[in-house]
Length: 120
Image (tube, rainbow, N blue to C red; front, side):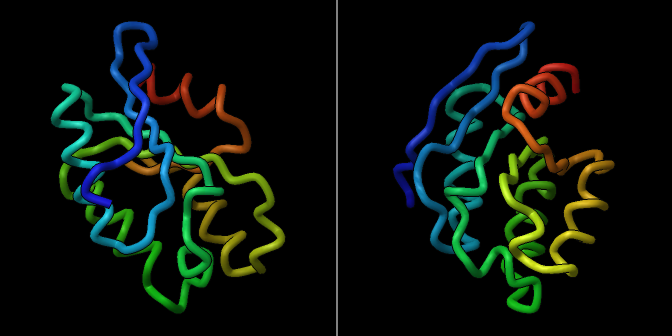
């Protein structure tokens, strides 16, 4: 995913990169970092429909590694999750913690995610 499908959103003076293509590997996080740098942005919006099934299986380590790479580059990441219970209790706990995160936060809807990113 070196050519990250993205959109750029300007909201309240904040530039937000929105990922519009499927994430395949944890290395795709670096493609998103590059897209943010190219667009002078430090904020990133993802929808869970672009995440691979391994993201939702916390035993795989994908979610932790992917998010950590973005946080290491000081990206603010908001992810919109549409059906958290479908992925099991452990994932629900993961999202519950992420709802209070500083660098990575989980949301139920796109508008709330954008408001948080614009205000961070």
